[in-house]
Every structure is written in C-alpha cells, then in structure tokens.
Image (cartoon, rainbow over all chains, first blue to last red; front, side):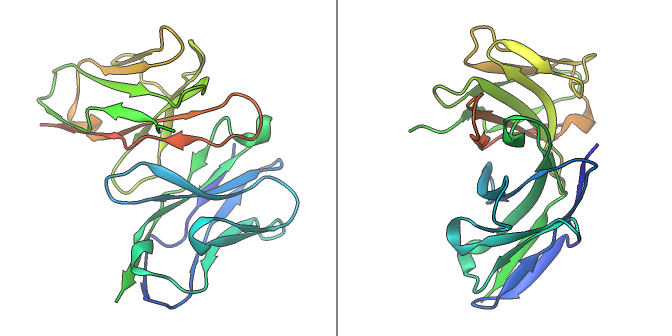
Amino acid sequence: AQSVTQLDSQVPVFEEAPVELRCNYSSSVSVYLFWYVQYPNQGLQLLLKYLSGSTLVKGINGFEAEFNKSQTSFHLRKPSVHISDTAEYFCAVSVGSNFGNEKLTFGTGTRLTIIP
Amino acid sequence: EAGVVQSPRYKIIEKKQPVAFWCNPISGHNTLYWYLQNLGQGPELLIRYENEEAVDDSQLPKDRFSAERLKGVDSTLKIQPAELGDSAVYLCASRQSSGAGSQYFGPGTRLTVL
C-alpha cells in the first residue's frame, strides 16, 4: 500500500520569502502525486498534480512541485509567498488506472503561516 | 459551474443521537466520495460510489455508518448512533469517471458530538 509523509506540521514564513513544503511517499508501483490546499472552513482545492512527463509541475497561485523518483519526493515550492497563502497544504498519492484519480491517500498536512 | 454542495455546514448533537449529511456533486460527475477528516489530519476515504454503486466501502464502519446514492446523483451519509469520537469534518468529493479528471471537494460538514 502507498503512504505519504509530510515532514513539517507547521511552517512559518515571512511575506515575500520563498517556501518549500516537503512531501515524501512510499509505493511499490508507479504513483500519481497531488498537492491540495485547504483554506479555513473550506474544502480542499487542487493546486497541482503529477501524472507523467515533465517532473517539474506548475500549478495555480504561483506554486510548483518537482517529482523526484530516486528520492521518492514531491516537494511544493513558491518563490515569494503572500498573506493569502496562509492555509493547510496536503500532499496526496494515488496508484492504479484512470490516472490514479480514483483513490487518494493523503498526508497529515502542513500548516503554512505567512508572517507580515 | 456550481461546485460540490454539502449540508449542513455545521451540526452539533449529543452522543447516541442519529445524524445525516447530504452531498450534491458537480453535475455530470459519476464518481462520488465521502471522506472523514479528523482535526490535524488529512482526509481518509470512507466510501466511493460509481453512479449508484458503492465500489469501495472497506473503510466505512458499517456497525454505525451507512451511505446511499439512490439515483446516482445526491448522496447521504448517516451515523446512528453517534459517538464522541465521530466529531470531525465530513467531506464529499466528486469527479468524472473517465479520463484524468480530478476530485473536487465540497466545504464539508463539521460534526460535534457532545
């Protein structure tokens, strides 16, 4: 079975500074990887996903992530954060057909707090 | 396009009482999911429907939880009786069954059991 580890439960960052949120996965087969964002009292919103092809994936709101198969990682990055990026971020992994969207396994989340 | 709709948004009940949550998926999305999200945790799948058929309910505690999607559109998740440990956010998500369509999540129902 696959699993996801988000190493940092909380990450405080000053506004306009860069940020990296770490995600490592384990799976014995090829995986599909996702990052979701959850704003307070809202559902999850897809930021970006890796299905195949280029290992550098660009998403919404200026976020990007790089799939590293040798290190089994899919870290999320943004070069300059804004107050509005304050939220909970979840990494998720999936295997199987249909681009792996059928069943997601989520990490425990990283709370990103932007400091003015 | 309307997103996934869930109601109620908040529910407070006493233990041993029944409770039900409702979800209306995005139009045209045949696949529907119910997730449980405990405080400080990521969502965990409870059940997945393909149209009206529950194709994955291995994580649903069937002694007290039940779900239905009678006409392959709206879905209801029920807990009877509720326990203190059921306090959590219950998320509904939907997606198109074919292709690379992603899961779209509703805002969730926050359940508090006293």
